Image (cartoon, protein in one colour):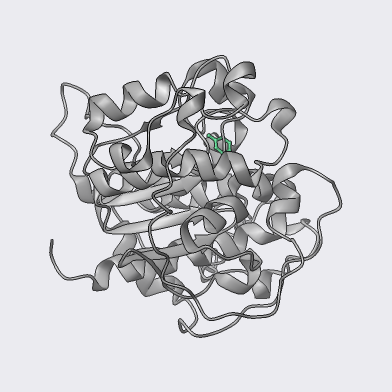
Length: 334
Ligand code: URA
């Protein structure tokens, strides 16, 4: 498959409609919808997506290594200050659907969050203080998470879900909490939402893989994403995380971010945003501009599980990825 076709296939996989200039066929030759790059019938029929409203997806052949540049160049996200309309209320009552559309409180300026209060995670429950967590190296942090009993989620989990990716990835993806598959496998985003996330990463030329296959050149941290969740344990029946659970788990994510030192953070869904930006504002009001977490540029987007249920918003998520890629390009060298 040609590179541009591969890229278009990824957009198709994400469900993002796209267009490209129609190649006029030779006289008499049939126009093939797929070859012309128009959205397949299933995309075109998605409610709420008119082809004219589709994101201008990359149309030129672009090698994965050049993807962010191409994405930024071609997708032209709106100015950072632009406010986007709220997403439509979801029809189902699922956790992620709720998480992206909670009624917004009165607008507040984007805060620069302080680290969590160093009050520490319930020592009486067998966890250690956040001040201690803030000093741990990777192996100690992983071991501490694995044995954490700071909240009731430890009772129902099969295992903790720590994080995955190169420890100095330039990109960091923050999700919500493990689901059933993650709880079973011990890795974030391995279920259907993870499949979509991987496709989104691939569209940016990124991977969660820590190492390249033996017969291939080493991966570059600039092309690698570290993936972590706000909670390290699965909430029973995938219910929403509770504030106390988030508070107790927070030092782990903070330490992961401090160790990775990402150049850019992509916060996916309401709970990641709450944890990192300390705001209850709806995703729809936060996306489209660059926030900061401890000085690190942070882009807000919808959670992949939400996108699976709200197909029209995939186009907006693609815009968010383009903004992230464009922002990354403007950062000074590390
Ligand atoms: N949703 C998340 O937020 N994280 C996962 O790991 C899986 C689903």
